[in-house]
Length: 79
Image (cartoon, rainbow, N blue to C red):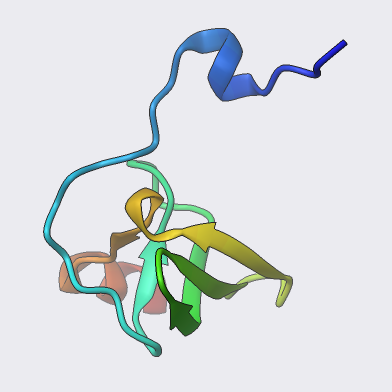
């Protein structure tokens, strides 16, 4: 038996085809909501090592699932 993810059950696709270049030091998110937010620590191939800015937990993520935070959102997050 294979466990299903929330994304599988509800048919949610996190991938996107935007041509954003994601580099170490960038702040990113994985969806259209504002949280969680991650700092990119390193990029290798199609994956990135990211750190949750709120909890400090590290994760590996596929680059095609990450979206750079816009400067407007960064100013909101800083408040």
